[in-house]
Length: 285
Image 1 (cartoon, rainbow, N blue to C red):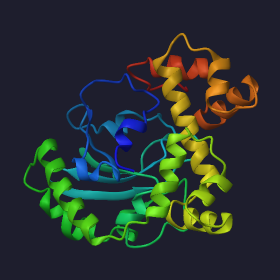
Image 2: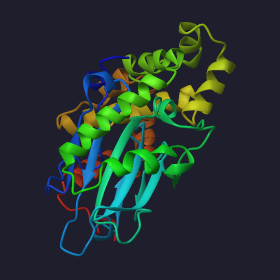
Image 3: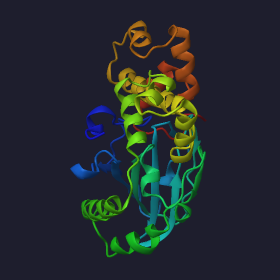
């Protein structure tokens, strides 16, 4: 699984938004197979949190899960865990209203359970209190971030801390190899092939994925395929739909377009237009 960063770097619905309020830092090399990035979201204007300013934020599936820590100055006021999203949705955020800045840890969907105290056990499409799965976050990790620490310093602290957590964890290599197969085939692999490659029955593979990821292997493959498709659509303005149909194993163009709209919440043309906006507030009004 090492080298996931070269295979799968998910993007948002608005990759061009660059007002300086959001930033990402990749983890250290040892954590690259397990953590997508550390990220921060800052205050947009004095006295107004960006989460409150952007009332209609489109959240699209990225096959990742996040621990989201909200701070008022140096004090933690909110901590939530976001499970896998299967479809796009508008978010007003579940963060507390006095949040001024956010620090996030974004795991791959297949690695979050590695750092969690409890299994995911079929949970998806929800945001819950982070301490339910990561009780050490507020007790051990958050105190390390106090004192007006910069984003880069927070990322350094997070690298050291999660390296230690990784050393104490038991990596499920069957699940990691299954995820690697899904990535390498761009989400087109069958569950039977995944199960065979890791010497499991399909039922065992299904059960393990729902326990650790929240969804089936087929569901994860579908999310990965959609996200890679979105990256191709966004980055290649002169795309050929039929080429993408063949590349991602869709039956035909209608199948691709319908699947994309179901996941993204809008058509391909609408999605590309939306992605080009520097400010998506009010787009749906």
